[in-house]
Image 1 (cartoon, rainbow, N blue to C red):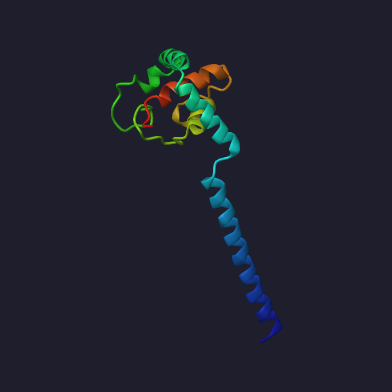
Image 2: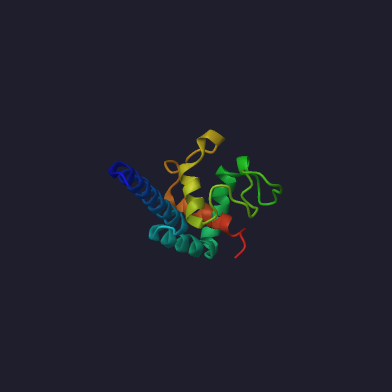
Length: 134
């Protein structure tokens, strides 16, 4: 076998192995949430079980969110419906919070991170989580 042919085969094999390794890393990064997300999920679920926080979240939601997203009686499959079981941008509590904080300006959803104090964001997410199956 010629040396250049052996080198070419080795190069192809090496590139394939690198591609496989990178794919595995990408999959594992999405499969397991960061520890900080797990911690935040726990905090938000605890807030969901705290009546005073949920009450505050309901008021904040009605004041700031209801005009676009509707009230809890909204039905139908729409991105703006936050009371069904379908989440378009992540259903985990930390993902819902991230969606609230960062928004989706291209879809008309403003980022609230600079406008809402953290306790209001936590309260709104806690309120929304009360509508999800446990």
